Image (cartoon, rainbow, N blue to C red; front, side, top):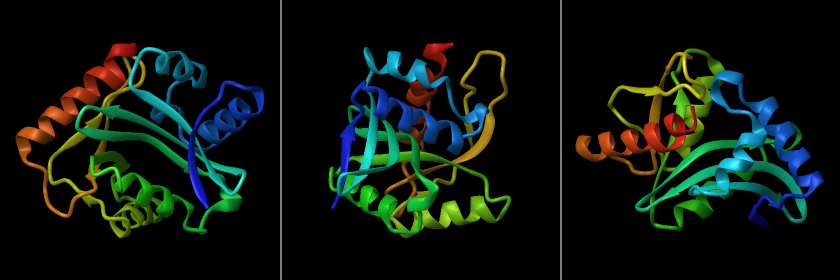
Length: 176
């Protein structure tokens, strides 16, 4: 059985989340972990630990906006990968009936290609518009990426622009 539980601010959960977060994402694709804890206090950010039975196996950081979810980070501890944990978590999220969007690296190497294919197998599609992940820190460069969504068609361009504008302003620039 898989569960998504909000991070409780106890030492073991914080250490688990911080370790996995920092191991899984390069500096330019994340912020300081303790900033996340502060940000979630007054924003629609959820910091979650993923459980298989009673064992913590991953993290899911997502923003719950009015009509869609934005997955900022999803990671499974290496020893628990390839057990369909992330697929089961995405399946649970898809049951919310909300649009779900997330960023993925461009398909430039085997890992990034496999990541895109993983999301495709889990009902996501690459959106056909240009996307640049804003920097986490003022003065750093944006990173060209793809935005994927849990629909099998393109999001209308006007909706897409609205989504990326919200992400840029409320997830990134607000915290510079």
